[in-house]
Amino acid sequence: MADTTFSRQIEDAQRALQWLKKQPQINPNKVGLLGWSQGGLVASHVANLNPDLDAVVLWSPVTHPYMTYGKLMGADLVLKASASAAETPFTTTTPWGYETTLKGKFFKEVLTMNPIGAIAHYPGPLLVIQGTQMIWSSIPMRGCTTTKATTNTLNSTLIMSGARFQGRAC
Image (cartoon, rainbow, N blue to C red):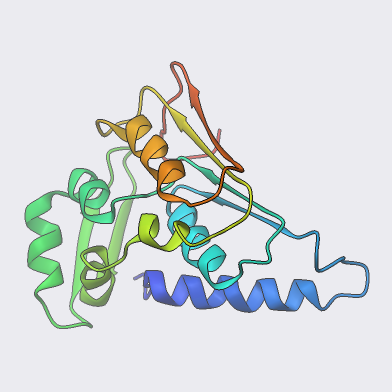
């Protein structure tokens, strides 16, 4: 059973980034961050905490958690689970066939996390990559929304025609 939350993943990534910046072979002023899928949500929040990052890439990021997980797991499940006790387990099968069990505390954060609001404060270069054939609708437009939410001019969106997410990297 996955005992995970977005906030815990953000804390873990923040600790890893701080560790990396302290390594003698690393120039701490030349560290970038890449987040893929749910990792894009995590990277958005980590970038908000680290405006000194050299660049950020969000690859098919989760930009609207409720819309994404509502589509993946069913809106009824997300709402029921988010209203449950933090430790209550919920099991579901993803569209690509993986069974997963997550606790109520994960689903509570589905309703409260705001990755677009977080990345909006990152002042450095931002690249958002999206495919046009995502399993949920309007994702490419959310990629555009993500880059437009930032206040700098060092960002861009790459829309990949025909690209889609299948629940795995390859």
